[in-house]
Image (cartoon, rainbow, N blue to C red; front, side, top):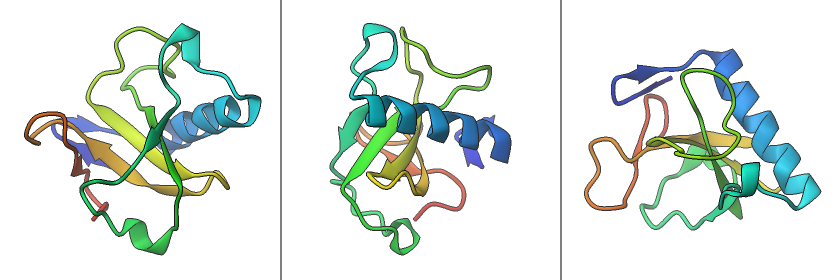
Length: 104
């Protein structure tokens, strides 16, 4: 998956998804940050037919997000922990998101 100039392997996507899902199931956030966060899909992505409600969690090029700056890229999943897609602030206006490669 490519988000802006960042490329993520399936393992990196899975690591972010699994971490975000764990925070969701535990009712906690990463390192006192606001993430895990509800994602309202104001942009209107179809997410390959995966239905919401959606949550977003940062995906990083190195390691798994544990607090601090989240960067521009996110994994999006639903409350069943099904991966819906990957989105990024890179190339979007304001605080909006655009889809990474493979997310529409």
